[in-house]
Length: 350
Ligand SMILES: *Cc1c(COP(=O)(O)O)cnc(C)c1O
Image 1: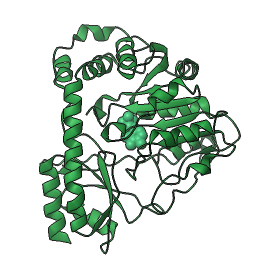
Image 2 (image 1 turned 60 degrees about the horizontal axis):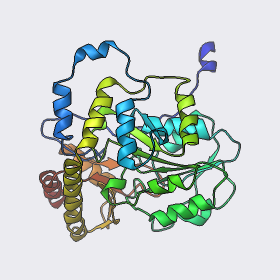
Image 3 (image 1 turned 90 degrees about the vertical axis):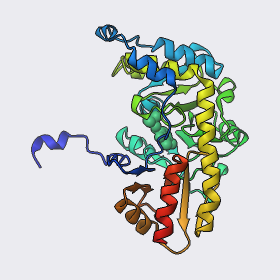
């Protein structure tokens, strides 16, 4: 190792799902939405006034923040926007978890949480989900430096009711509680209203899944003015212009079309509910999903084998070689046609 390498911050990074590009592929590995964004987004991009790109965007992403505040029924100063919810969550970890007590999140959850904790030297503990992959709320009733709960949880797809979240927040008034609602639009209950009651609760959302805009990178958080202003100060200490002019424009357009949003989300839910009994008939155990993906395990064929064989056919699903979940597959709900191709392939293989 060269001497200068002693001063390098070394970290095992988060590994995102692969982004292959084959003409014939069925891509069900990163929980993207199979439908295009709202027509207003396409129109706004086509008509984008590129002269506006000469200027810096408004640092508070004004139009988008205002539209989000309205759609969430909160004030302008209760909203923080970022470059996908990964940026929002990373900023929240950096802002709120500076103490010595461990931050708590489940052993099986979004695998980016331990990476941010490691990056920022945040101590953490991971209480185990129970044998049915449910969060045990009592595990969070102890001294801690913060709490992070994905609800619905990933990759388990299981949602807990908002009363469950409130129990956790009620028992934790002395640390910041983050609820990651990346998948809430597909069947979860939101904790948004609770942010008005508890000044230490931050709810994080994204445009990547339910709004079909993973490529535009828009995420946001809702919380008390105090929480949001602390996050703004941290963000403004490393990058004041996180949101691009096109992302502000397109995000605002997406929020204007509630009917399209509902239609595509409902379509995904319908495809999901059709798929579940079909998986079960083929010998899969399927967890009850409140998300746009399914978490499945086969009664006698190892998940890794199914994953590899599907991959050979250019059907991509997600497999995690991790304790407790290494015999499961995470399968994004695609279009009905994509699911048909998946079932055809599984039928041949199993
Ligand atoms: C997809 C996902 C995110 C991040 O998505 P962005 O594209 O960065 O908004 C955050 N949390 C969970 C649980 C996710 O699955």
